[in-house]
Length: 224
Length: 121
Image (cartoon, rainbow over all chains, first blue to last red; front, side, top):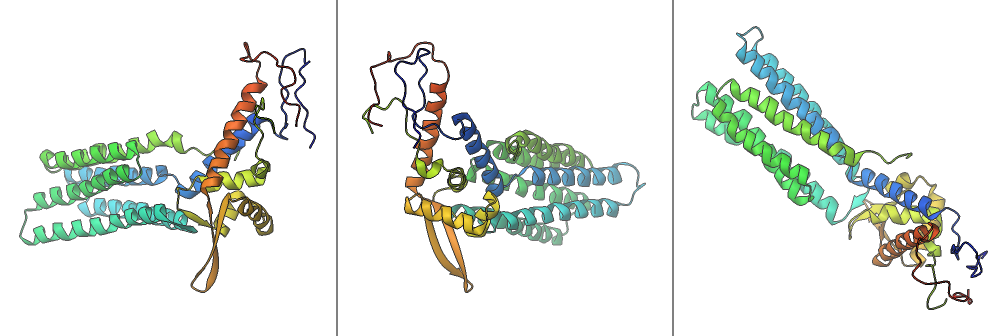
């Protein structure tokens, strides 16, 4: 070992390292930090693209509903339905792909928690749809149906974001959930088509804002 | 080893860069979580042979737990960092910080230059 012993007679008073590392300590610390960030990104992924995609889907989808309902039927309402369905399908597909890729080759308590959280989404959403259908069957007026369906789905999403914030100790996610349930609840007071404007701007906007706030935290490590 | 080394010794097991990166990557997982060999290999970007060699050294030191299992008749190797390994990484990072501070010019050192503090090295 070519360990240079600290020279007590060193006139500068600098302490020579007894075991000079090949890389400087600063460099080693940088390496540790970069590797840690890279691993965290690979294992836990980033919620930013998924939040942004859902934000775009809600904003444009409900925006389309608002436009078709508000502006004297220049556009048929089904166009809005197609816009929301397509964007929602794209966001769902992206969520599933990310989940599957992240889970690959991992086992233990945390991946199990993540899996249960993931499955909560389709379970809760489908149950909500059944609930809404059941009410529809009792003969709800069209305007109430529209208020119910749009608000209930956003409400479920908000509750799940709240749960995600609790599970993963994420303040931004929790705040997004709190905001989303409030927006969903308030949207029914706006009536049709005002509710669509509320869901588009406040609901979708909340998601986009959360994505923007979280972005710096999940930026890839420099040089990696 | 003297009782009062002026600077900490760096753990030779993880002083090797590839092993340091392996332990750092495994330590990002929560306690009790494991990663399959191919996934870790992809993450650290090493050949299977290279990774195996380093993992054996880490296992011998008690830093990494290697668990062989079967999933649908295919052997899977699950890897995780042990408590010893986590502590070793923490100590190593702490030591680096101390070395870094020592390398910077200190305005007023706590100890005046003692006569030959580390003779037995």
